[in-house]
Amino acid sequence: MKIVINDAEYIFEDTELKLVNILKKLDVNQAGLIAEVDGKVFNNNELTEAVVKDGSKVELIKIFGGG
Amino acid sequence: MTDFLKIADRTFTNRMLLGTGKFSSTQSLKEAIQLSGVEVVTVALRRVDITKQSEGILTAIDRTKQLLLPNTSGAKNAEEAVRLASLARAAGCGNWVKLEVTPEPRYLLPDPIETLKAAKILVAEGFVVLPYMNADPILAKHLEEAGCAAVMPLGSPIGSNRGIKTIDSIRIIIEQSNVPVVVDAGLGAPSDACLAMEIGADAVLVNTAIAVAGNPASMAKAFSDAVKAGRLGFLSGLATKTLQANPSSPTEGIPSVQ
Image 1 (cartoon, each protein chain N blue to C red):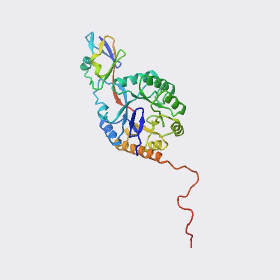
Image 2: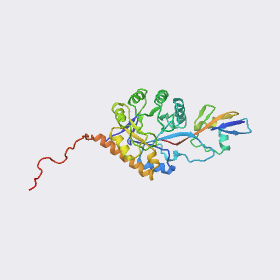
Image 3: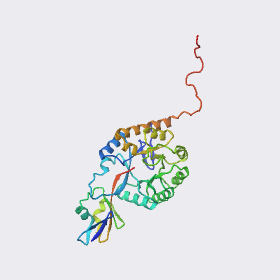
Image 4: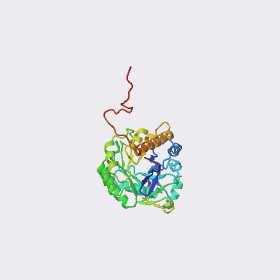
């Protein structure tokens, strides 16, 4: 399947994956992370519920310094 | 003297809000927070660069002592601002939001129409809204009537360090406002923050001038002290300015030359 994470394309052999498994494969630190998958927001406690399929669009977002 | 800053249902003793952008390290930010004693810190939401491991700024913030105030920076219209506020809430930032809608990047001036539109939506969704705004007294009243918990007029463009160029309009906003007035943006030196407080602002928000200082922690302290001095000056009743001199020594009994 082909998915888009933060505007970059990623290809996986699976047809469906839990988002947390993708994050592990990509070595993404999940602390403080929230995700938006196909328009649905998952807070940090809900990340394990997020499922990604072919064509999914994923936004990975965190808190940064700002004024 | 008991002198609290009250915004919505929260009270604060420190009248400086600190922006957390542009600090060279998390440690530098942590020291600035500790030395200034700020109780409100602003943060932003951004996409994660998944090719990099970053420490994250939350390690610098003690959330039992500092309230997180996420901003909607990067939003170019009301819709984007509402989305960012919702994401901030999902990220565990609570329901306070510094509303920023800045459609053009050169001066980063806030869009008054989209800001008011977003404010109404966010208030209806239960957010405590503190809007970054042009120093426009009429707009300030509209935002207050929309249910904003404070108004945040700009002194000069974000990160410009030019000080308070909008002082006459900010004076009017202060005179007319029923919600706290937090002077935001452009405060480049402690004296700028002091001036804001002397004219009766309830608080100031500072970021760039502290973050890029040679010693951010001591600059944060300098700003915090200036805010306290300015506030005390305001509460003490400033003397009236006059064009002509008024002698401070007695005009009678001057010894004559023999």
